[in-house]
Amino acid sequence: MPHTIRVVYCTQCAWMLRAAWIAQELLTTFQDELMGGGATLMPGTGGIFEVYADDERVWSRRTDGGFPDIVELKRRVRDRIAPDRVLGHADRAATRAGA
Image 1 (tube, one colour):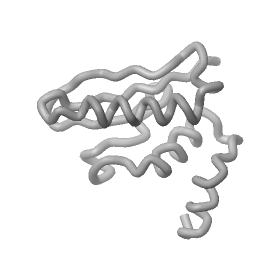
Image 2 (spheres, one colour):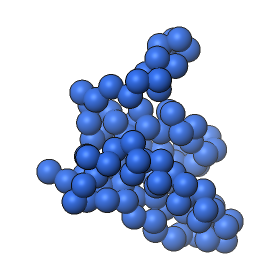
Image 3 (spheres, helix red, strand yellow):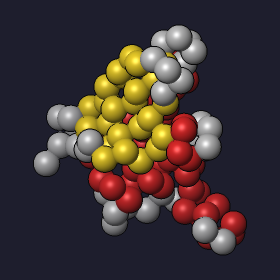
């Protein structure tokens, strides 16, 4: 089953470049899982910045308190679309931090 990523960003806040960078990072890390699904940037307003994996919200600037740390975001996406996948350095950093 192909998986999808959707990054919703605020055009009023000019967050398109940040959204594109996030999408590029996720496409690079999860290229096999996203084959046939892909990543989409979706413009919004009102300060929105949210990331969805298979239509499940995995990050919200409003509820999670700011923009995601890319390592934490990759772990959340992995937990949704590829739970058995090892992220290498990202998993080791979480272990050292006690997460």
